[in-house]
Length: 268
Image (cartoon, rainbow, N blue to C red; front, side, top):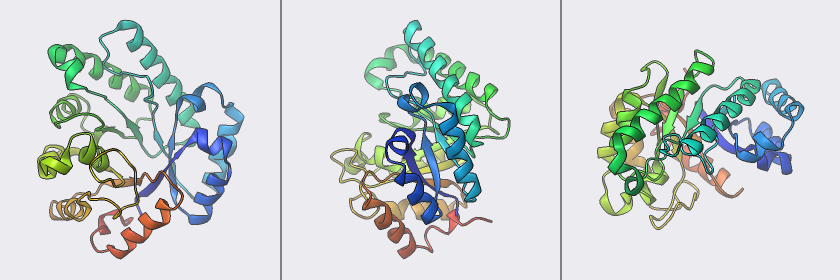
């Protein structure tokens, strides 16, 4: 399957059993290249973990860092630090020969709307620098987080190479941060992203917050999402993002129960 499960590398460093768990389950990780992984973990540890996943026949995706970063910041010092951190993460990521990268554009209407054109131009340059340094065949998926409409993400992705950059639709972020639970406007987002909808982040919540529940444990209209993907013959990969150990097997069971709805995840 084109299926991954998130694994922050700081967690894996402190609790190696998470690595053992994914290898035992035969599920590929989307590795969170978080601040701790960049600043505190030695290269030899990364090389050893990469070797273990490769020996188990598992691919690795990489989620680039986002904590305290702003890829389109109007503050030159923050922008410089963001680009430096992302490039450092990219260098370490090469050890894992990633199948894909995920990044956060982090457009916040209250801050950025009055300076939209400058936010956009700075964001374009940041992500252009990243894809220039990345492996030439590795795609970059840009993910919605606090955006309340898809428009800024669509504008950004349209200004980046069509063969390299697409959207990651995080359905849980849409349902909570973008008030999708109240607005019931998933089709608006999916239609906007559809031409370059290449990846999904899957988790559930009740709309009141980003709870990262097991699939089916909240009110996210997951089957509506899967129906849209099949009806439009899309082939995105996907990452499960459980925040408890119990949520992982429960999410796998949900996918197995609805296997005909998620056949797009089957490897060709």
